[in-house]
Amino acid sequence: LSSIECYGPESRVWELQTAMRTPRSGVKAVVLNNKVYIIGGFDGDNRIKRVECFSFGATRLVWHEVPDMIKSRSNFAVSVLEGKIFVSGW
Image (cartoon, rainbow, N blue to C red):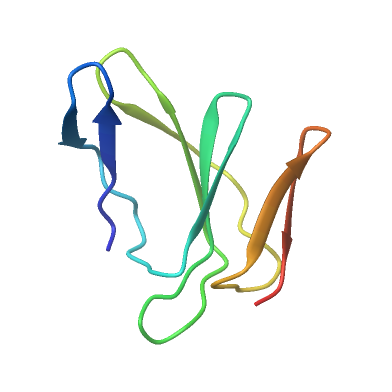
């Protein structure tokens, strides 16, 4: 999938947001500095090294350019430590 849904706890409603450029499964997401990083995944044929990043604007998601990872990955581990994103595994 390339869709992104956002849940508003106050409104108790799910809303579709601007889609990712790359459809994928087996993806990881992490938050750093008020931005959500969508990392890697699987497109049905290949593991992906693409990273997409967004933050919340006034009325919609704002997408930010982020370099791809060096290696393609899906179903891996991700964490944030001291302002850096770490990924490990395939």
